[in-house]
Figure 1 (cartoon, rainbow, N blue to C red):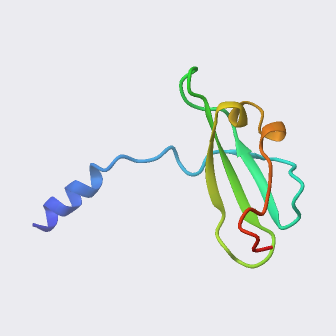
Figure 2 (cartoon, rainbow, N blue to C red; figure 1 turned 180 degrees about the horizontal axis):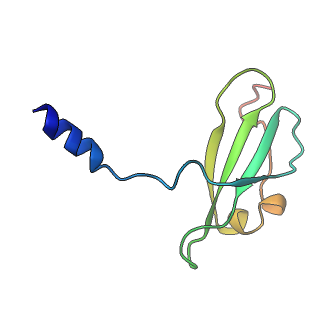
Length: 87
């Protein structure tokens, strides 16, 4: 039974070796650091990954998939707002 378990683990698909490579994205909000990945996906549905890292504390970064105009030009089409009014 143990050998079957190990064989199953060996058959799991592996990723490309970690998170996508990102470049800093200058957005006007000093509470977070923003980075964006290169365009990916098929030509008719290009996407990017936006990584949002809080500047204070040890919280994990959030990742957001951007599509459409936001994926094409994130520096112009991504707007930062406090929509839940938590500061």
